[in-house]
Length: 359
Image (cartoon, rainbow, N blue to C red; front, side, top):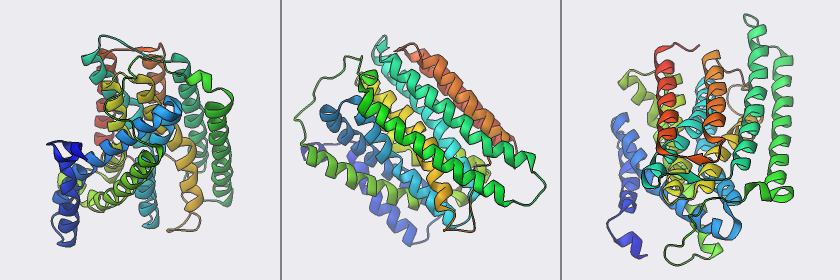
């Protein structure tokens, strides 16, 4: 409890009731948006602390998986709310944005922050290659229904397109389950940590305390993310931004704040395997688990089935992000300039999506 009484980031928990009050009082959308964003920051930090404690029991690979799972919970809630409202384009944009934010922005900031504190940081290159190959397969799979949709453009949505997306969703879910078996059961040695930053700070939490804290923080993150999304579209209109840009950048960054901040925090502590497990593992989970789950859920909620028909600029952005992440992170050693490179590419892609009208 002492860390909550000292001046710290946890004082921003006070923004939770402030955000709720602003929403109830129907304050301006930007005010609600930014207050909710501030409220998510300490929640994300708490998720990171809980996951770091669990990783001392489970190892970095499973710890990163847990953080990615709980960190992606707000994004899933955001997408489900948007699905119910029939905002399929914004959901697709937020999925791509989450992948880009994890592969480029979160990983880049982690490399930068860790590299400013340590000259070089080492991590398990084998695990990164596994993450990269899974992401490439996932992105290729996600482009199949997009290509089918382009081939049948100008025609009404046919039953075969809906069926294709449902079958693809099933295949992706099977692939994700087998990926978990590979990582946790049969080839756990591929994900052993190479970094030396495993020093303990303070007392070790019990497993029950870490799990309870993680669940509570994730629920809070989901609720505040919903408040934030409610004001996101109007905030974008005030700032002159398209709904697609809001989905790719705003919703993705804020919805994924939990795992992103956790990844950066782990990098600062020289726990690069856990940091990359969070950032890259979250991308895989979005592509292989959240995306197909949303396709299935859309069949009985909202205005109709959502198909994975991404606009071409978003497909190009995903492919480039996976290729860059593979090239930059594949050698098992990071430094601050690698982080700068990845952040610059993310900014350039965001600029492209801001200026290019995406249908």
